[in-house]
Length: 205
Image (cartoon, rainbow, N blue to C red; front, side, top):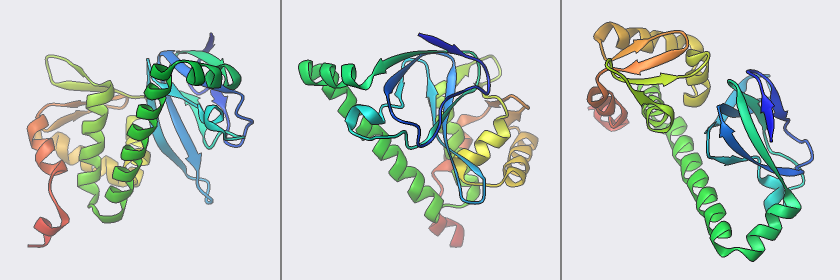
């Protein structure tokens, strides 16, 4: 087991994929950098999830970079041991297949959103996904704790930081959310769902 502090890198894109990883506590982000140097968040990892397992299914290198968002404890499993477990224990192999299927569905959904959906809908959907994944109930609503929340929302929803700030400020003014620097609290989730389920077609007519 290893421990990492906020902002520490666990591995970099194109590093040799020697281990599969399991997050025991804390939060991580999986990122890639575009050609113009912009960071794009591919996934947020919470405790109990597997990540960085590319070597376990034959890849020579990691396809993205892993960065700790807060204090994180990580268990590393060498890819040889990962492959042995998958070969000897069908339940373990099935769990890995289910995880890969979930990631594929999430990736397809995000690609579709970026191609055809307006930015408010993308931000609303991102907030609802985060609420489902890392949110917790408070007396004010569903609170999402995320360092540099606006920057991460921008990277997750494929929007600029200024656009995310404008939309969050407007929703805060309307009372849909409470927008803080390190957290967002969803006060009226049903209204956010209405925004998230809106369509481009309905906007046009």
